[in-house]
Length: 324
Ligand code: ADP
Ligand code: MG
Ligand code: MG
Image (cartoon, rainbow, N blue to C red):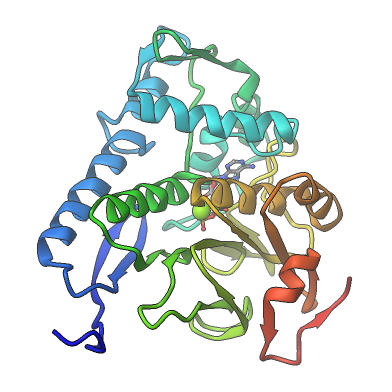
């Protein structure tokens, strides 16, 4: 083959992790076997960390809350440990023990409505990361209170993106787009040596309408927003990120938060974290996080960005203006 031969990407769409996953490999050596292996990898991850899949490790940990520690795989143990690091750094405003509030509010699913105040109080009392015991020697996790539940919805897709990236790297690929419902990992560069162009979704428009784009090489770009998982009751929008301190969905004027960094597990945890922290505290938090940039889009179409993100962003929609 001539060295100028065009590289046609080979891609596949999967429905898993409660979202649409699309992986495109830009390498003529990619085959359908790679996608079979990716499918198996994702099934394996979901079967380990899903809160709702009976028999998953997280399911077992939750089912044994208040009863007994559960031994989990090293990977699951490490993922919960990473989530706990963010919980500690935010004094529990990011909290992987959020399971009861997530189940109660049921946001993004059929029939979601505002729960009774007393039910919110009961669920909230069970959301407390300080009651997760980690035994590093035995790889055991124990939830101290009966009924407590871990939920890794804030970090799981990022983790899966990293695992997909690592698989592709092991297979010798260095150019790919991994997209788990907007949780994107742009591997390497385009085959022609150019940077990848990643759109930043306009929170007020259908998917595919960006406010602008950024050009990146080997970075992950992850967004948490109010626009995909929510319900409206009495004219009020309830989105899916919950403040564990109040028991209610966060309602702080933010439409979305986008993170750009090197590992998707961190980007995913950070997008959720910054959403809860809000603009001012969130930007301060990112100042202390190396190699990481953030962009907030507010409901009144203002942009608040780290200086690095400002440099990256090519704005294509003039309705949105920088406010910092
Ligand atoms: P997406 O689901 O679109 O990827 P996020 O990564 O921000 O969005 O994750 C939101 C999910 O995280 C929720 O659906 C829920 O499962 C969980 N969650 C909600 N609030 C919190 C919180 N304060 N801390 C940790 N996880 C949370
Ligand atoms: Mg996410
Ligand atoms: Mg997240």
